[in-house]
Image 1 (cartoon, each protein chain N blue to C red):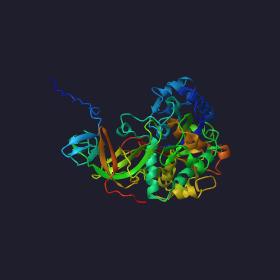
Image 2: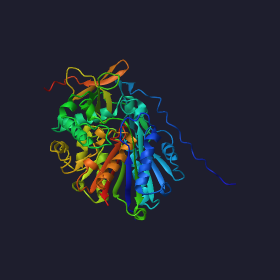
Image 3: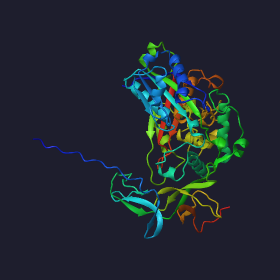
Image 4: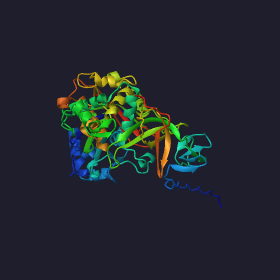
Length: 382
Length: 134
């Protein structure tokens, strides 16, 4: 019998270009804030899980030693953009199996170390050697989506406009200025048909959540928390031949399993933080999550169904497009947003009476795979 | 005296030796593929393990020089100028990432494309007979 697991606190730094901070400098403040907000002592922590992709050896231990948090197991997790969410999944597993009671999960990344440009991918990969970059992968998804549906580049721009509108309300977002369809379409081109505002900015970030068992939560006098209703992690499956790039099986399958685990469906969700690394991704994921039939995700953005006042608020934080995408931190930051929304702490971007939230983050550009990893969580206000 | 058996050593695969996807075959220069002699799965590149059935009985084969452009983009960032790149589904079903050289016919998904080789560069280009659709 698996035990209920709760997120009992969240903290993060505003994402941005923090050139004078190391991985340690990025992560220590939210680590302290999350521990304090959870009402625990560092001696209460049973394990630490750390998601990062480019932090180097012992990133988690380097961070934790600064506050004297040692002895307990510290696990460093690399699953590309899904690293942070994978770390949460690992913590959830340990608690739900009754092995531990309280886990700290850190997501952290410092992308300014690369001096700009697209994410470094593994030089061992066949397609990376041929020149693939992540914007090109999503650009080809976009080309195909525009080919198979009635969507237009204006629709791709609408996703960015919505993201900026939400991000303007979020003090943690890297971009806090609204934009227009014209500005997005006329911006510098990155990989056709994607322009710069259709691509998430790189940057630095850190986010921390504390997870606890029901037993520990009761001991802590039931501080505000959210229940982990589903935690699903999938890996990509190789296709040597045809792959439908606008029906990514890894996100379809993960969503199906998450809904089954949580016992809810797309209509029950009040908010979703999804992996909008590029604007086309949001339209495709509407379909993967069952918010729209295949080919009709574009209708939701046109009709305003996925912003405040719509059916479900998608990326109330501004998403990766506005908030930024320090890869290892993003999955944890999404869960921080779900925690704040479901505990009524989201300030100007608060969704009225939010009760159910989903977070989704994929990871990795690898030849033959749709994505290397996909993590989906569903949370219930508790 | 007891008899013991020694576990055989697994050996590393020298997959960094062949880094070119272009090879010479009886039919000329072609993309290098691998075909599994156990299950028939065909793969791009020089492979020694079948990704479908994990057999190591894999042969080097020439891949078709024609296929269909599944999708494409033109990359504007980086130092290479504007670089068209696409996924091509070859006529035997294998997909490959490829540089695309544009001619007079605008690129579109599902158009027929064919392999071209220019010194050490290989690329795909709209097949002869592809016409403008506009």
